[in-house]
Length: 459
Image (cartoon, rainbow, N blue to C red; front, side, top):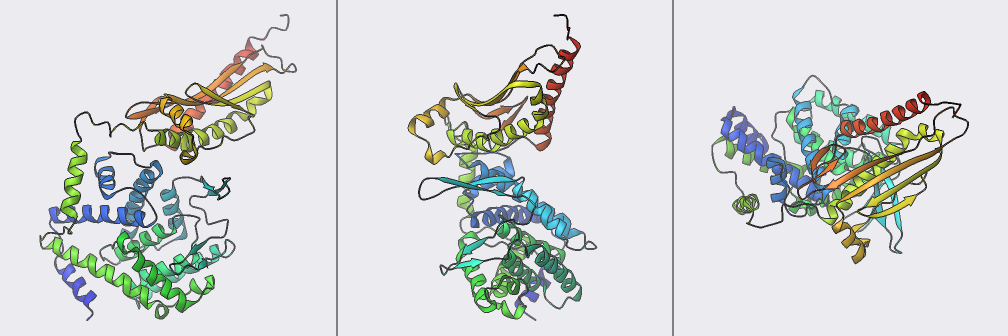
């Protein structure tokens, strides 16, 4: 019997856990997994910020909005994995993997990169859709490593899911072997344009949960060992993506061993919790004290006020720009009634007019001048407006003009979009945005209907 088997049998013998022991174990894993899996990929939230966000729904200090949204979405994905794994009669499907990815990324977004010559390039990251452009990575040894091409990705993912479901039924591989091989094969495909590492680790825990094993955490401080284990397997398997996507367990011993160590650590913590023992790590007490300090705050401390320049720019780039594009597309049919159609963005009192066929450009905080930053600091609102005037003469309507505007107002601790207020670090739901857009459409219909009704050809 292996050490893992011994630990697992001991873990089973301690079931069911007392409610208080299960609660502290679930809480610890939820925080550790969300924090570490995101931190490996560059998320900048501290452990304390993660804890405040996920347990108390609070944001302190100047946290990056994208990182906050990613952390919350990742926690939703964790719950999805736990619920899906509970249904033992339902096999793993590509649909679930794509749903998981769509939940993680939330929506399509444009990624902007500043090139060495100062110019900006961009490309779209698709949520829940297999990649449309090649992807690669620089390994720990400094080499460029190519993943599966966009053309071969769908077939390779289909193969991977079919392989998993067959192997699960055969039960020849242990759950941790099955999870490790799946992880490696998945990463060699790298089916999405972003989020592949996080999805791989979520699916590892999906597999372990289906087999009644505790979930595991790959610690961010252990990132080098994690990546080195993967790289050692790459050397053994070879660089051809389709071969890597069908790698055999015998070729993946370094990674299986690494993941087994993670499972041993998880089982050890779980057994301690089941016995009512402490499951705190050396730095857990320090984390708790820091958390309490952040919750208490200080008298006169403005750190909880979140109308920072970075947050305002984030709302401009991630809310106003995409919504303004939807707004233009939504009422585009009404443009045909008018000869003059104008669009512009406003930041405080500063306006930037543009052709309505153009798309607004994002602001990059690092590229702002001192004057620009001061403008953003003073701004109490940002907006997008569409003016429609000068009715075309071939329509039998009373002459009419209108201006539609969407305004985001900034307050000290939250902001307003349309008629609702939202905390910084959160965004309107798709339903909220669609409701606002429907309001603009209805306004245009009402205006045009009235213009037709009031038309008098004798005037």
